[in-house]
Image 1 (cartoon, protein in one colour):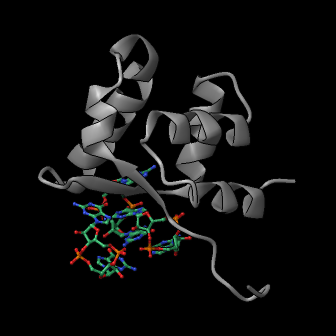
Image 2: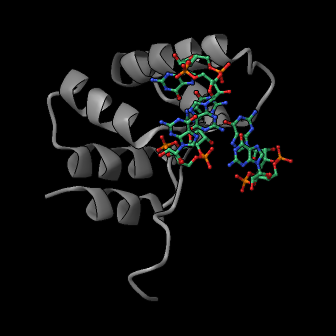
Length: 91
Ligand code: C2E
Ligand code: C2E
Ligand code: C2E
């Protein structure tokens, strides 16, 4: 890989997200539902989100973007590729 490679997209797996207990995933579930509603994008199995939205979610979860990303990968909600999207962005 080279420096010109674009960062990978952050793509939420909505089916997996719906399976995570809401005590953990509630804020993210509500955030994703709001984006779907704003876009009128209701029937997708996945949802591409903005890099900025991950930063906002990190504030909501009181974690760094990279720690939150690891957690979402652990839930199966993000692909492990997403880690690169965040490293690309932090600092
Ligand atoms: P907005 O940010 O003013 O964007 C207006 C329209 O520009 C969007 O309409 C979409 O057609 C296009 N657009 C803006 N940014 C992007 C982008 O990164 N990729 C693509 N493919 N298109 C983009 P849309 O989708 O109907 O969204 C309406 C409004 O809903 C947006 O207005 C924004 O306020 C909100 N919204 C939608 N999706 C997101 C999201 O993922 N994150 C956040 N924070 N807001 C979102
Ligand atoms: P991709 O970005 O790799 O997305 C592959 C497929 O994942 C999409 O096929 C769609 O079925 C699903 N997908 C990804 N993000 C979302 C999402 O936020 N909501 C929903 N409902 N589904 C999502 P699709 O729609 O046939 O698009 C094929 C390719 O066309 C995309 O590959 C991308 O390269 C391009 N494309 C489609 N829509 C946009 C867009 O709004 N912006 C940009 N830049 N490219 C787009
Ligand atoms: P994408 O559509 O392939 O856009 C890739 C990047 O190009 C976006 O990364 C953003 O930095 C820039 N970009 C694209 N369209 C616009 C625009 O209208 N205004 C501005 N200011 N920048 C734009 P970002 O923000 O991380 O978004 C990642 C992906 O999330 C987008 O990939 C798209 O699939 C989805 N997305 C983000 N915002 C919206 C939105 O408002 N509506 C829709 N339908 N999809 C969105």
